[in-house]
Length: 461
Ligand code: NAD
Image 1 (cartoon, helix red, strand yellow):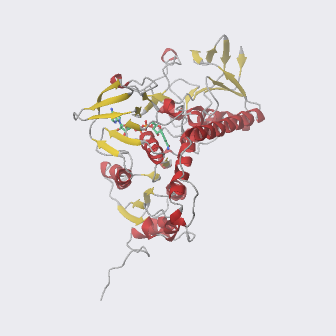
Image 2 (tube, rainbow, N blue to C red; image 1 turned 30 degrees about the vertical axis):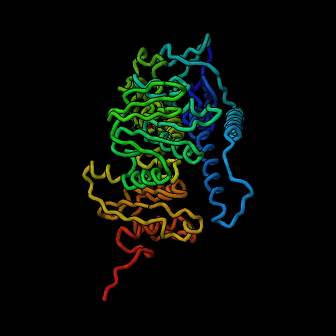
Image 3 (cartoon, rainbow, N blue to C red; image 1 turned 90 degrees about the vertical axis):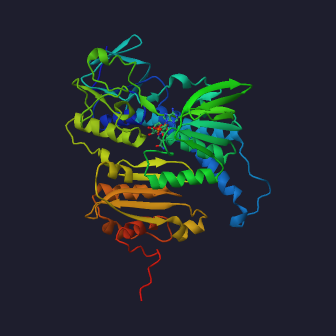
């Protein structure tokens, strides 16, 4: 039997960050992990998909080489096995990086599957670990729909798709959320015929409607088929293709079907009910503001507590959980977690959307600024985009939503502004370098009061 200050189950962004933070505070922490270091984020999610996105975007730029005054000797095309090899090498390097980082802090990683035998005791194979504090950081898993079970070959989830050695000629994606839109974008750019079926009235139902509508228009302009307001009734594999029947009666025949209808907390195999930990309907582990469950000394951070399924939120929760557990204060503020979607065009947002403000009955004012009026967007040939700002009636920023090139970068600044409780006027007074697309943020902030400099004035005589 081994004893520690803290045992952490899971080496994803939440778990490994928590372990490092504990070691920084001089505590003895250990991680138990059944898969690869870095969790879903590094091994099957954020990083590998962004490696594909990077290749797809470069291809897009090469296709426009002539417009930028560059003659290419051959037509650029994707060599998918080389793209995949690059992805493998990136993830392997980053995994090694985490391994070395943990070793530098003297943090032991035990490979195996942990289950609770008591509130402060875990079993891993034939080893028993005890600790006064145990943190569950086991991430999330696929939501399964009975009539939409992946077979791993024709009908797949994104884990299967990330292992593809070649791209299909056509794909139907079920679900137009984060995963659906990111896969749709890079596959479309790589030459795959893409159809998206989304159950709600439009893509990305949780994203501000101005952005999601613009994304949908761009997707259609880029040749994708988008079917909304209906769901999939049946899939049938026939002659090497999948025939998908929708509730509307339509059928679509594609080479593959990718299911991206959401994820749920991965809490079911830990024996949590037996030790009395309270779980929600989807298996989310209920926690308080210190990430402690109803069982003293048992904590849950990251996707598994169901608060928000984003890697950067998970790692911040890891830091705050450890800090408060050992007597410090929490820095995590769940109100201002930026969201970034690496679609084409890119989306970045923080704070409340128009839909949320209306649902909550909050009176708001808005300003907007198009990329098409930004010098840098012209220079880069990326004029599709928009910055949208919402404030309360006292000018305090409530939300910033950006679609367009480098939207995910612009939102970093917006996150600071919201976290600091800034007004639109204060944000407009921050000097933004020229020429950069971040000027659009200042202009959208000015536009709340109708004084964006590069928006046409109404001639007064
Ligand atoms: P999601 O919740 O973002 O989207 C699922 C979509 O599927 C929703 O739009 C929903 O309306 C739709 N849907 C559900 N059932 C359907 C059905 N039967 N037919 C048609 N449409 C249906 O989930 P996801 O895209 O699977 O992503 C999972 C999680 O991973 C998300 O919580 C997200 O936070 C995270 N993620 C983040 C990033 C990022 O930060 N860039 C990227 C990928 C995934």
